[in-house]
Amino acid sequence: KNQVEQSPQSLIILEGKNCTLQCNYTVSPFSNLRWYKQDTGRGPVSLTIMTFSENTKSNGRYTATLDADTKQSSLHITASQLSDSASYICVVSDRGSTLGRLYFGRGTQLTVWP
Amino acid sequence: EADIYQTPRYLVIGTGKKITLECSQTMGHDKMYWYQQDPGMELHLIHYSYGVNSTEKGDLSSESTVSRIRTEHFPLTLESARPSHTSQYLCASSDDRASGNTIYFGEGSWLTVV
Image 1 (cartoon, rainbow over the protein chains, first blue to last red):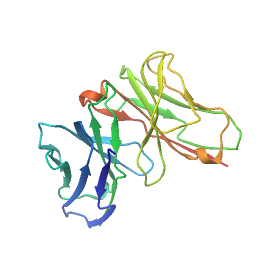
Image 2 (cartoon, each protein chain N blue to C red):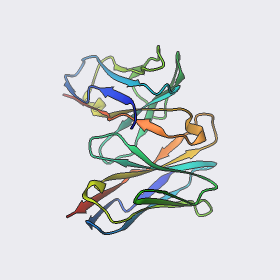
Image 3 (cartoon, rainbow over the protein chains, first blue to last red):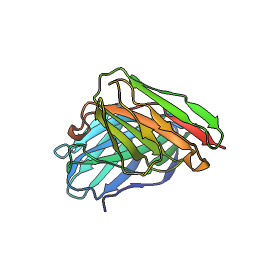
């Protein structure tokens, strides 16, 4: 069964600190992996997209890594800000169909305290 | 900045009422999607469309229906709302999900059925 598991489920850090969120998946055949940020009560916003051949991608203070062999990805947030408080969702797409089916994780709820 | 809009953002309606959630995008995307998301849970695909006059049911069984008469619009209708329909509904669009292009989400419509 194709699945996407994220850890931790929730995380609290102090402003200015770094943190790393994890995503493990079993989706096959793999097409790409995306990280989204979802503020409370809002729609998800794309942070990064990585294909099989990419093992790291940055977007400002966000850096995503991908190990397609172990089927693991991480999202590293540097110098956290209060505005980083949100749910971070890992989404994996397969290439078994034209649609490119998406598998969503439940997200990691990050809270940044001042 | 995504040009995809959902209305209403918040709605409380009585059981048995008919409701249509509107979704519009101005990016010219052929592919559009409706997802359902309960708090703290992953997104579930309920409907998708490849283009005008093309609609398909998603992974999660839903009593809602959709239509795609124009490229820009992808409304979702509940003929007779029930309390079990209480959830957040997210509309999204993309050029080509399978290829790894960005999927843009709307801000969501929070529906409460009392």
